[in-house]
Image (cartoon, rainbow, N blue to C red):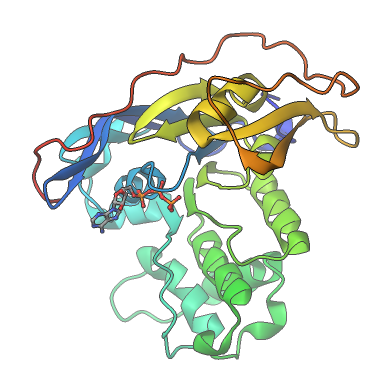
Length: 310
Ligand SMILES: Nc1ncnc2c1ncn2[C@@H]1O[C@H](COP(=O)(O)OP(=O)(O)OP(=O)(O)O)[C@@H](O)[C@H]1O
């Protein structure tokens, strides 16, 4: 088991590898992501973390083909996804995007059943397998009793869980989740992270909650100003120095008293002065020394680079 994640060996080996190579994306000529390289090994949970606007959603959008990169490639098990018909990638990659919609006039069951579309011929109805898959996906997210409700009448957290069920119903090899814990209360956050640990697929997930990321991810990629500045196991990557430099907060990283994993305790009173890195509380138990140095923090991508609209 890599990093601080609670992955079980049983699921490792399922799913497909994702590699992102030298990705560059611009919106209306403004380059927001450049030179991004990151990967998720088969069956692994790879997290993408970084400050607001650092490019997390943009990178994920290229994986689920909502955006075409200006340069670079997304490889699924070594094959460029842009060389595949969308119907084929839809059978391998499912997403919980940040654009979550909200005015579907469909029932929850109908929304989740949309996850089965890649497996059907045009106008084909649901077969028994589809119905069982949808029922299982709804049960997985705790919405077994909600199938007949209108999607538009759900709360934000319920809607989120219904869309996660739609992604599960797609039975993907790669699950791409953009901030899946948004709107969820703390219990549902824990349940969702446990669901991710139990999926037999590769997961690429953006998370703002660094403790959740440290707990669930086997590997973390840290984005800052459109470029990857650190990659590695959570306890190697999430150092006080990186938290100050990239996120601008004073924090210590201690051992979680219940799990033994890294626990990031942020000083809520003020933001960091990057030149004055806090020393760890001497009474706290420090995390184990990193086994390998993470990728060094590198210079950010230039603010405005000419490029074409995606
Ligand atoms: N559709 C868009 N059109 C123009 N600019 C965009 C668009 N989407 C994102 N951007 C810009 O691209 C940059 C990266 O945005 P992105 O949403 O990828 O960041 P993020 O790391 O996911 O941010 P957050 O943590 O706030 O969700 C930001 O400067 C943002 O303003």
